[in-house]
Amino acid sequence: MYFDAHPTIGYPKDLTALVPKYLSVLPLDPSTGVIYAYATDVAHVPSVHDIVSATLEDPQNVALQNDADGMDLGINCDDPVYCTGG
Image 1 (cartoon, one colour):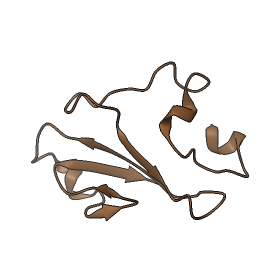
Image 2: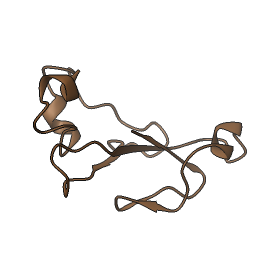
Image 3: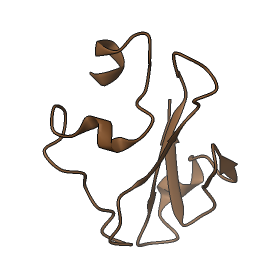
């Protein structure tokens, strides 16, 4: 929704841009108690690549077999951190 509403910007620089229009509050990662890690490729405007990560409770979770690993846009995506993005 944000991406479509801001075609010249693309993805937001940070998640706070989503509050309050798209989210009432920023959700916290229940495993860490902090806001989910998020980054976008600000070198390209509009930004068409972003990444969100969450620490999974079960380091053997099958979702970790198909997610991104290593560093991506400054976020460490090594297991048990699950990363996804566009």
